[in-house]
Length: 297
Ligand SMILES: Nc1nc2c(ncn2[C@@H]2O[C@H](COP(=O)(O)OP(=O)(O)OP(=O)(O)O)[C@@H](O)[C@H]2O)c(=O)[nH]1
Ligand SMILES: [Mg+2]
Image 1 (spheres, rainbow, N blue to C red):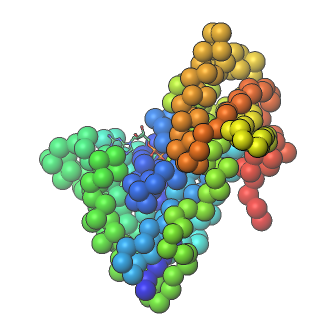
Image 2 (cartoon, helix red, strand yellow):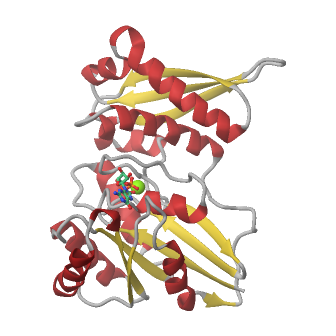
């Protein structure tokens, strides 16, 4: 038996959540094209023969602009101190920039554990660009214990990644039962599914201004359960956009989310979505706490 905790870190939008979902072959983390999608540390557990890989997806590390951003970056940075292996993701299709170097600095400050660099989105670059990328990595980021080229989206490089991590797992331990693949509760996954549908349909500030909470579940004998869910935004104008003309947008969000939640639960449900305004909630600690976005000490 061997096991290890592996933090998947990197700047926003490099594909961390896409990778963890591919690794555990389940959707544990939501994915979108908007930077800042993930707000929690999320475990994805993979058992291969006698190896247990415990991956931790993290929010993109960035220079925060408000309390929510601070929470997101802090939990991603703090987990660096606790894991056995650091898996640092960069985007192959973009030049290595200050955002990546900012993450590298946080890694070096907080961990002396093995560091594996995963160059993701290689489907977007040529073989020649791969060679150039290696030089750029050495110049801007320095040395790594291993470097892997992969495409989380196309499941390319996954086997090589598991092989690269194998020597760094700790002998003689196992932390989770075989059938457990995440630490996310079903309710948390449900609110994240709703948030994902909103992220995929909105732009500018809206994706960042949305929080989702389950208010209650009405259970009636012989009828479908009804999940009442609040969607919080920061201003009235955002509420209008999410509801849409004649409620069209909210209806679409509801339909898409409901289908996915039904697949997850294996039963039909009603979904009641309610849009509420909480002015500037991303800057307000009590509300962040209510949403679970405050670090437990
Ligand atoms: N072409 C390509 N796109 C990818 C790949 N992996 C992820 N993406 C896309 O990149 C975008 C961001 O993916 P996420 O997995 O949400 O990125 P993340 O690093 O978790 O982002 P944050 O949670 O915001 O930090 C999405 O549009 C993905 O579909 C890949 O291997 N190739
Ligand atoms: Mg993510």
